[in-house]
Image (cartoon, rainbow, N blue to C red; front, top):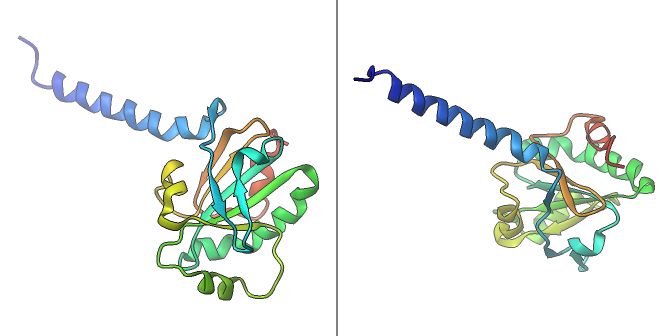
Length: 167
């Protein structure tokens, strides 16, 4: 007869293993192709991820009502300007929950930004990427593979560090 503690211990160990895989695998993603998408941009153009292959792409999912997203927008803009000459394209993907185009434009103001704002109506692209909270930033290499995932706001200089071995 087996001791009564073996079955609960096995269940706990299995749960820990599954959680560890769920936590670490998305961050490693170096062999996972990024889901392709086409989204409208705030400027009226259409952006297709596959057409950006050959560039490093930073996808930042955000919303105007998210205080952490708002806090990182200045850093995202500065990083986009610094990194563009090195072949990095920064796309700020608004998840369009409780958002309007007019509200997004009012939030961004008249200032010209170094990133392109995409509109993810119904959060379909966010769902395809498994976004469970915002801000979340994905880094896609020149071959179209997911290389990094950053959940939460970007600290000053953090995007440069995340891209260091990719660009």
